Amino acid sequence: MFVLSVIVMAVLALWLAGALIGVVFKFTFAIVGGVFSVLGTLLGLLIAGVVLVAMAPIVLLAMLPALLPVLLIAGLVWLVVRAARPAPSSTPSIAKPVQP
Image (cartoon, rainbow, N blue to C red):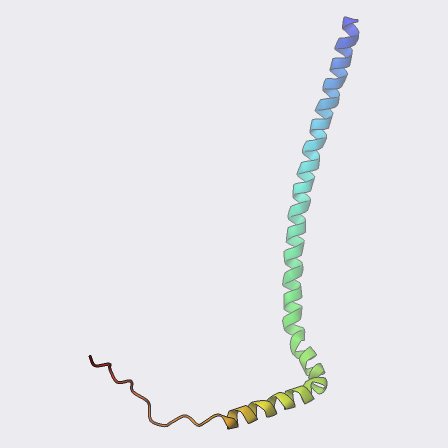
């Protein structure tokens, strides 16, 4: 019976050592995969930013016919509001000091 318990303990010790090695490999590959994922995300954001900067003027020019009526109405409103404001005085106003 003693020999059987020693054999069972040896098998369990080998099983636990293998499980520990497996956990170490799993965590190692998880960390390496996470680093590659972060690097891939940053590279994708960089490429997306460059493409956005390059394509934004083209997209805006393509949308100009659709946005032209809105821009004209906004310009007309701006002109009316600007014309309705009083003109600024040409002489600068100097604040007088308060005398006790």
